[in-house]
Image (tube, rainbow, N blue to C red; front, side, top):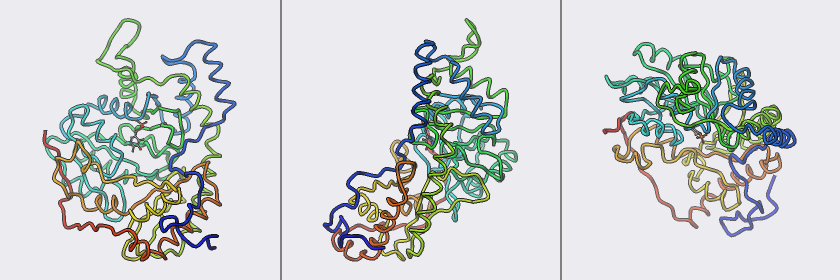
Length: 411
Ligand SMILES: *Cc1c(COP(=O)(O)O)cnc(C)c1O
């Protein structure tokens, strides 16, 4: 398998793709079924406020997840905010730094201190040992993130939460359609929050949901998402407006109908990446646990600069030059992102490591096997041409040392 040209684009060749390939390019659901429902909703003139499509979507999602309640929201971030409020979190909450910035934002927004904690040395989720070290008298909860559709160490987090009398909430924005020990993610902890943003595996354009088996929490988030209205004129709490609308729910229903096909396409892409990347020295593709249900939506590689001869950021430049818009999810880690940078620089060694060596590659329905074969060929060639690329780029080195494993923001 060689490219039909001699030079990588970064060395002056023509980009192998004439159009850009993206990570998280939206899946668009069953178009006819979406448009039929949009027309239906317009005819009905019931466009929001717990409309029939929102209700149907909530029932379908709850059923799919095997969870008692699904309460949809206008987006995942609002879902996190409502869940945090309904759980009564305050003071400090333990959260990974290696996540999308919405996770700590949802805490900070409500005056809660995100206590950034490192991830496991051999993984990418909250490290139970680091959590224990980070718990203080002000800690009220743990907010775990099922990164890249892979579950956290749920049982160990549950144990820690019980032991220290903490609430346990999960940011499951990446994990719709994924299971843990055979049970769908969505039913763990006190509540889990999903995102149906257009870039996620199941889309409602913008949208999210709180999934929970706890009746009281479900009742509370329903109140909070609709200004706190208990009924007609009774206002039970200080709520906000975080409702999902009917057009979004229509997209959600149309997307659910096509979910199996999307997941199958993702799985085939994952297999194609496994084949294409096998044998590249120093490159590791994060595998899915085949004993679980997976959405196969996140193709993530780890670049070992020493063995591969090329560092992650240079590989990123190589790919971008070929119109493969790979992304650094997540870089540089929330503890290094304003407004969180007033934490000491240079902390959380595992987070720093992951943020410097991982890369997300394009997949989804708009990417095919032939595209992936070419992407893998580019990566392979980048490794072979590493020295030439290095000479042509002149890059900087990062030096890392031993850092503490957790840090709390001071108010
Ligand atoms: C997408 C995402 C969110 C936010 O969801 P929105 O629906 O975009 O508000 C939160 N956390 C993680 C990890 C995400 O990837």
